[in-house]
Amino acid sequence: MNFIRFIFNVLWNTKWIWKIPSQKDIVIFDAAGAEILSEYLNNHSYIIFYTRGYYVKGESLYISIVLVSIFTRKFWSGKITEAYKETFLNYVSPKLVLTFIDNSIDFYQIKNKFPKITTMFVQNGWRGEIGDVFEKLEYSKTYQVDYMLVFNQHIAEKYKKYISGKTIAIGSLKNNYVKNPNLDKNDSVLFISQFRFTDSFDDIFLRNKLGKTYSFRQFYNSDEIVLRFLERWCKLNKLKLSIASYYSDSNSKELGYFKSILLSEDWQILPRIDNYSSYAYLDTAKIVVSIDSTLGYESLGRGIRTAIFSTRGPDIENTATKFGWPGEYPESGPFWTNNKDEVEFERIMNYLNTSSDQDWEKISKQYSSELMPFDPGNVTFVSTLNSII
Image (cartoon, rainbow, N blue to C red; front, side, top):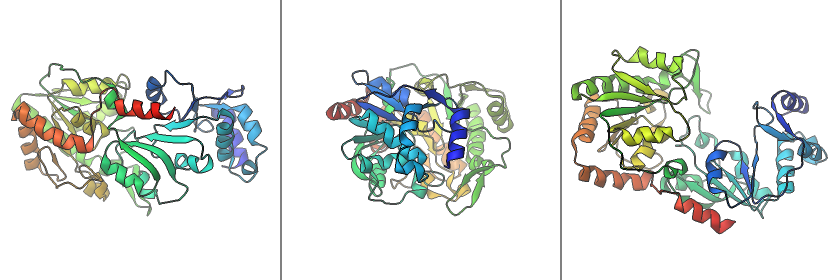
């Protein structure tokens, strides 16, 4: 980022903080997920380092740190944001730098620059290749993270190919935070929406490292096929179709999108009220259906009857969308398939609808322990944190 652009963004977007940051035990690197991490930091002093404060409106920037960083060599060599980050860490002098952004390459390099600081990332979303970190990540000796807290052992092994450090499989921090009570199930099938705003479904949604592009229409082809199947299947089996929205209100674009797919009006959309409301929807549904969302795997971890139709791969020419990636699993299993085959969809839904609780518990635990272990209260995370601070 050049100096003029940096100054323009600071003046236009940023909330200025004039005071000099004081020393803290922990720096939370990036504000995304800070409210979740902070739930476990009550016994420790911490401060948020806003990584996007110079280009995302509403984030904060320490002007005192900017002024000090002006006197560094990196600032004048054009590495302005790096100079700011290093100056900030020097002033705060934390014991631990913690982030919920596990796919931040900038974060991987902190340990190399500050060997006395412990670093830890917590995985926040199901990972892939196209449009995600593993498409662009290459091994580097400068990539070091002391503790990589990840969903499962499969992704742990994947990260260890590129980053040196210790991996610990903890499942999902958010999923583990929400208790799993024995709530009464309603007669609903809950489909997890992965809809994102767009002006046109012909717009580019993904671009691979070779420059090939894929539209929203291509990406969401699987969602439309699965939803139309679910509408018919729910009617036949006298179950209510619900959709867990990605957004916090019944957005007109999202609602219009689902209305364009579904023929009847016998369904409902459930808004995401806060960080944790979606888990309440999971816990009360009879069956949860996901294409390849993080929430789908979290549902499995919670022991909920979950169908995963990982059928997006052919539309975006990518195998990392297959069930359980980067683990290796059959193309179809008791509750999943990678194939756009309505016979398979029906087999899976019928199994989830009619199998005994004992049978489902045995099957689900076999796979959830490998893909999304459930650790109520985040005992492993807390014990790891306490061992550092």
